[in-house]
Image (cartoon, rainbow, N blue to C red):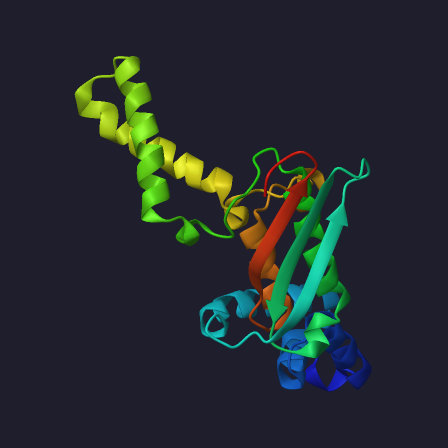
Length: 207
């Protein structure tokens, strides 16, 4: 399909689906030969390439999503931030926020941090001591103890950091992590998307 056959209506539809600029949307449709789904993918790839540029942009808008488990004993609140009110009200953004809240409520390994970067040196050192003690009890050879401990620390950080976890709805999200889903949403909307904080409550457990 030539560029002259790309309609303004198609450009509008693509912009509404992705939040991309008009000229970017038109160029993607031209490149995709008018195939709307392919154009969406093209814009996503370009968006992921520019994610680093977006990461430093201010996020003063967003939403607080909640999830209460059916038994009424587990509840979650999560704050997801973005750059504009337009994206904050977008269905994809709202769905992402709800899905993150649902994941936190049901994750096999309850997250304690948003990202691994938030884990303090003291917390890491405490875990290191535990792993070192276990290795000593099991009589592991000294020359491989450090490698074992480093591997266990890496595994532990993924278990306690929300962004590192695979979403519990593996069939729907094909084993993608929360960070991967965040990246895809950022690429689709063209905005910096931030999972800023969360709180998980369970009846009978201290906060």
